[in-house]
Image 1 (cartoon, one colour):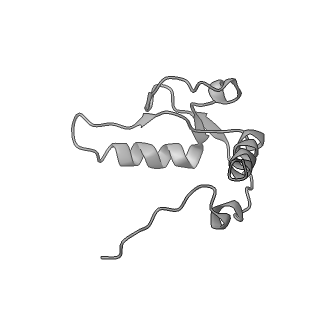
Image 2 (cartoon, rainbow, N blue to C red; image 1 turned 45 degrees about the vertical axis):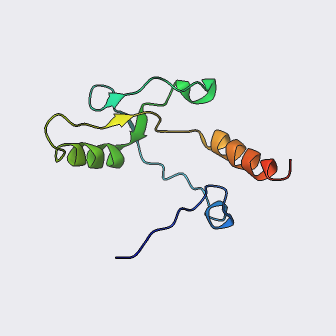
Image 3 (tube, rainbow, N blue to C red; image 1 turned 90 degrees about the vertical axis):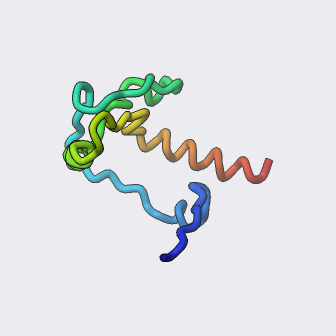
Length: 97
């Protein structure tokens, strides 16, 4: 069996992947999947329960196959593009501080 290694989010291979909006409709998972507490960031707090529709379908299908008593809990789903870029830039800068 092949061993998988960890790739850091700030790795140049990750940063090189272009971020592109799929323009897929978003759906709230409230009432479908348990939600953790809202994130501390005011930037993501309002929309943290939104996922692409196709992802919601996949999560619900996967959750239906979990053993009795187990279910998913979502802590944060959608993160605005400008916030993601800001976080990546902060990580890039942090290595120089």
